[in-house]
Amino acid sequence: MRISETQLKQVDRQIKRLRASNNFYGNKLREAGIDGVRTVEEFEALPFSQKQDLRDAYPLGLMAVPEEEVVRIHSSSGTTGAPVIIPYTKKDVEDWAIMFARCFETAGITNKDRIHITPGYGLWTAGIGFQAGCERLGAMAVPMGPGNTDKQLQMMIDLKTTVLCATSSYALLLAEEIERRGIKDQIHLKKGVIGSERWGEKMRSRIHNELGIELYDIYGLTEIYGPGIGINCSYDTGMHIWDDYVYVEIIDPETGKNVPDGEWGEIVLTTLVKEGAPLIRFRTHDLSRIIPGECPCGRRHPRIDVIAGRSDDMMKIKGVNVFPKQIEEVLASFPELSSEYQIHISHLDGRDTMRIYVETNGSVDFADMARRVTERVKSRIGFSPLVKVVELGILPRSEKKSKRVFDERFD
Figure 1 (cartoon, rainbow, N blue to C red):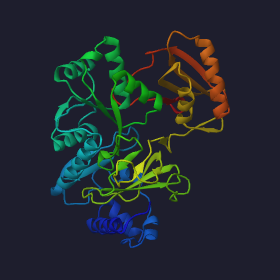
Figure 2: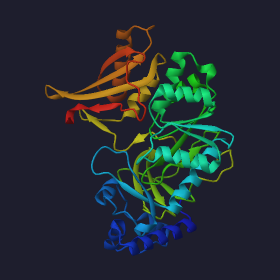
Figure 3: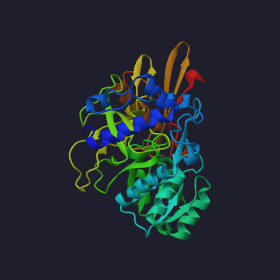
Figure 4: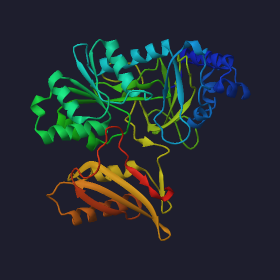
């Protein structure tokens, strides 16, 4: 999938706007001698923008419009380095709501639904994005935010909410609580719109089965509006990306070159009409692929596969490159194990050690389970981890994103 003539013109307009604004990013383009793009080749030769570039522009160096046109700022939820501040104009906020409402419609959600919103509000884009899309759609928003599970469940029951918006971690926590309390027959949920973190097939199956709802992956990041730039449809053949607002590329993380449709690589995004803080060829570090062909639903928007991980979450252990997804896939091959796990990496007595904590029910032999997991992980990554099997529910659940990898070598 290559950039279209219309999209090229939009990028060219953005470059000229950025240069004229004299913002941090526009000055970088000027220093690089870039004054526009006319061809696909020129576009693919444009330099990437990175998270560090955005941090260097703190606090408002990314602002590409006069300050009086900025109606809101959001900030990324990252925990390292200076925060990233993204300014939004009135049109940016409206465009984001349009995209989000389109996501809800793609999931078959209508103005008759009651939408239970659990992601956080404030500087994080999630909660307010879900709410803006809900209001644009004309549905009833129940803006709970995270935490207070007792109240969450009570409101679900009393208001008969039909759609749950959550991280996968919190959706699982709610599903387990509903099961534990025996109140599933009082819950009226039909669909779940889940985003903000990668989640595997086993976790997806648990949430689907325990809540009995259709699940939809929603995609986005603070730097590029927020969640709502894409979602899968009922055919579940990948997430449709709204390419009238955002252009998506997949590159080889090592070479930076575009890969053919169907091949896995890193998602790179360009905002086509964003005013407050346009970004060109922003490296997300999310790993996915463009799915070739047309979706059975008839939508022409390009599709990307589920997020398989991040190009920057690789762990180097005993000289071996290991991705969390590799461990997750091994664990998913054991039906006796739950979807929850933790990886702890430490350096003891001059060597690296990987410990994996997994959950299972009480019907299996824990020692035998640990041995089998160890053997299968070793066959996948080349060395033996230390595996600790614990009872179901022992590992912590999160109301936001679950932290699964703890690298204690650098603590």
